[in-house]
Length: 219
Image 1: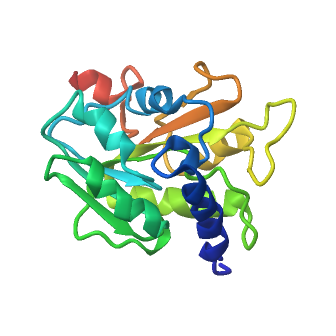
Image 2 (image 1 turned 120 degrees about the horizontal axis):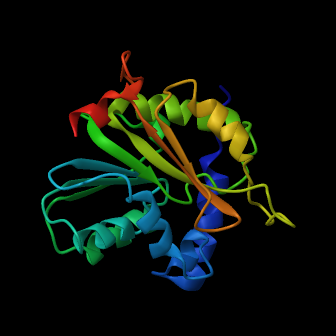
């Protein structure tokens, strides 16, 4: 794999940070819908007592969102932007948060996480590698370091126009990538017309007598 030029990515977000400071706009979210995305991405998982990896965490606002619902969980946020990672700890009052400047492909945790979330992380068009190729590598890495699975969101290519510098994903292609790793998958495109979220659960075991995933038999 050709090495990704993280400088280009950092420059994009650094310029936005200089303009907007601590704001979702620095992360590329200009329309004030960050919490809707968080609501969707956390909708299929109970984080109480669990560990969470936030990939491309920005300011760690996902943790602020979760703090309103859970108190006993462990959070690690990773991001390429030094500006974001320096700013993030200032916003958090609890000690169960950790932030690191690192790309997911170079990240080596001491132990696995239960679940991972990435919101807006894959929005920029990459120059050195095809976005789908990079996404496939991230899928494989995330599955290797998470016990239960992940939830990622994407800009859709089912749009009237595509944003400059952004990468719009075909939901069917993302779904096909996900099926390489599990059959236990949810794709949600029911909350915004031009964005979608993919949930992948590692455990896709099922009971042969009724072909139900085992998690439904255990509930």
